[in-house]
Length: 447
Image (tube, rainbow, N blue to C red; front, side, top):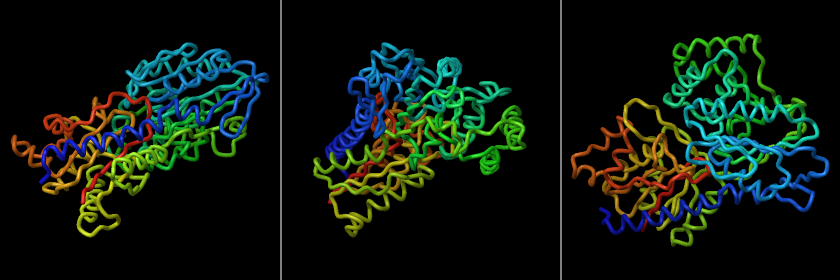
């Protein structure tokens, strides 16, 4: 079994790999890579714009990284910005000169979010064809930009959000519902912009980097339909549990009595440029480089991990054990890297998040093993409704807990991973990173 000094050493290595990954997707870094200015020429990716041909330039944004993204934009375009509204999570704001920062609730929307979203829509609706809107989008933007469709209250939207978060639905499924219950999502911000040119700079926090799913596709065409919402509700037995107003609105849409979201091919998007400026792939590349520097040759297993967190943990730990047993698919020492977004079906009343749940399950799978340590953490610095980004687990996790009469399976059943790791001093706490490209698993395997 691992000694405590080795445990702390591996924790240090894993922490350094994680921090390197986060630095690679810092909003300022990502913005500077994709947005530049030379006098009166603005370049976004491969597309150039003449600032002389723009009447007014507005900056809007929604997401955990949006305020930091706006700070980078202000450094590039400070003298040209007429006005701006940025929606971000509590504690994620930064001082800005030309943009109003509004902090709001996440993952469940709140009144601040409703008021902030209305301010954003009011600003956008004042633009015209000769104006340019820079839209800064990152993970968390869905919850932070609540604009409930007509007839749906915030309380009904909150209840629907909680039901979707607790049932184990994927972010693709959750955001399909969100798009059809909103006045801004699913490309509807573009409808409000009166033909203004829009450049969306996007930090991806979804598997596959689907533009219509990141922050529920505020500026992207939406291929999903109202009918898909009913399929998702039926899949998780939620049709009879959602509020009446939500079900009635979705029914109207399915029956053609409420407008669908704008679809691919709509001329609405001819003056819209959606550009991903940072993603999990960028973070993993930096993690690889750091792991190599630390003496652990990296192997990226996948950047598209999905599924129930506790089950994903079993697979990752199985691979680690195979490495030690047979040297396949890589020989030790090695740093196994993966990332994506797992889910948790909540059945208990504990406190935790998908990364801590994954780590707790990994602790059970690694029990008694030596020379292995896993860190699973959210690149945004928050795992569930907690102050932790994730947690560490190794072969000594379960025995250390048992020494103080704590049963890991019981904590897992109660979805109480936070309190389990808190007592072991194995929570991973970073504070808000002000970026968000999903979750990262770092699994170190010694020879």
